[in-house]
Image (cartoon, rainbow, N blue to C red; front, side):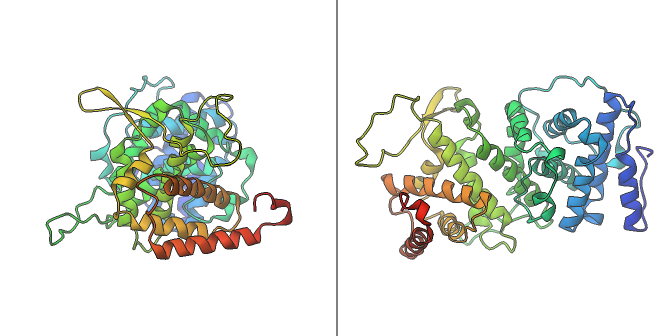
Amino acid sequence: MEVGAVYTFTEPSQFWSELGDILLISPESTFAELDYALRSYVAFVGTYLDEYLRDPQDLDTALFALLQSDLFTHHTDRMTATLITLLTQPPIPPASSLPTSPVSPTPPPLPLTPPSIKDQHKDPRVQSTLFILLMLLLHLGLSNPLSPSASLRHSDPATTNSTKVFKALRGRWFEVVPVLLECVEESSAVQGSKEPAGEEKMVMPEDGWEERVGTAATAVLYEVCRVMRLGRAELALFKPHFIDQLFNLVESTRDASDETFNYTLIKLLIALNEQFMVSSLPPPGTHKDNGGNSLPPPIMPKIMHENGDGEKREEGNLVLKALKEREGDSKTFGENVIFILNRSNGTPDSLCVSLLILKLLYLLFTTSGTSEYFYVNDLCVLVDVFIRELNDLGEESEGVR
């Protein structure tokens, strides 16, 4: 492969042949050549994403071509670290503008907070690169909430890192999360139509790139929050305005033909709710026994945030706080939380989401100001779901019933 060339393919087979050539490496390849091959792959696939990989199955094939190649299986830890580095650094250009020599094996140290990428996000080529990087991380973690791809359910664990990749992301938390948050926020950074009252109505972008990248970034954040407990300093990166933005996005995507983004946003919100709950649990052995006669009080953790003057202030559960402040403005969130719970199908992911929803419901019903959050019709559906689930419990779950 001659990096830096502009490719003109007349049929898909030529694209797949070139993709295979990119992934061919010599056993004597240096670290610089390995990194260069990975960067070339990401740029190449990102450039031709909409042309040859519009079908989800084709995209899966291209992603697993990397994950199952010698380049990745023989150098998994290094390639995983390089993927995360590509995500935290300014996005690389498409294949036609890549340099013609391998990258330096010792890149300069990254700043704690990456530079803003808002202007770069407007370029669809950059958006496609970000999307490929995020999808690779999701596939590598054996979880892809963006499509029901059979290849994910039957992939070989030997060629993947499972939750290891999300632990690696956490290891560079203060580099990775600002980029992911910005990707999510950019998914709504589109001018909307003016309402009669003069207020701007949020709409989704016409080309769909911001939504695609935002969905993938939201899914990565959800997976990280789902598989491990975050510390208070890590949770502090989720500012109140970001939580509020998530709720705005849930409302703005209620009528979208593809419900994936909407439900992924909800999954992130309920996972963050649990993180805020767990963050203030007392140390083991310090909890006073209430004799088993009553439920414990709602958990209202305190998270430190800095205001505009640099002074630290405490915030409670930001998800619950946002719901209280948005009284009447989060109808879609409430409706879809119940809908997701109602259509739970017993898979591990579905059970995990249901448990997260139940924890949120407990807080809503035991907290002053949110106990009447749901509309009567929604409450009727919720009661029906509870009755059905209780009736479906087996004899071994009699104690739960």
